[in-house]
Length: 251
Image (cartoon, rainbow, N blue to C red; front, side, top):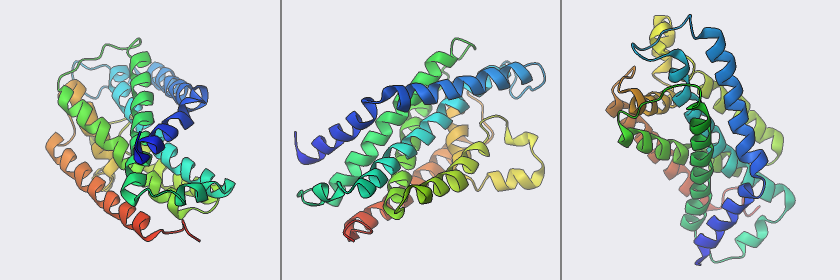
């Protein structure tokens, strides 16, 4: 294997060796959300015609788990390498900043897709799910995982200790994820919060992904794809710039 392929393989093995924690754990958490919210609100909430509330939840929970785990993979890998002091061994290699980017983000995409698929497969036992637009399902899954993997890379570069990374995840990633329409349609919100939701890129990832299953969404799937694509491009440019400059890597 070439250098970037070896690094990608190492990053995939890093989470695969502890799959009970990195894959089974998030799947179980999503199942608890599904059982609790689905059981409590199934007869009280109706979002789309001909779609039960439990079925409505499944794509949102799968995408939420995918996004959170893609972020966690790249960010935790970098911060652990910094704290443990083994990052220097990567710096001694002739790997370019492009190789770092592809390997870290690539592994984050793999973990995100595996967790998302696991959540969906188990969730499908509790609800009837259709596949109206498979292209949008795959496109938003890959783009969302890449975006969050890249954001995790940026957070890992910025953070110097675990509590800084935890603050980034707790005060940025988690609120934006839970306020993205995972458990509700934004049309059920007051006008002000509907407007606020349209400034949340996580909303477009969830809504576009859900469109692939049901063929209905709160906004145009092409608008969602444009927003997600632009966001991915922006964070990728920032991440590559930080890697190229060696931001907090060589100090």
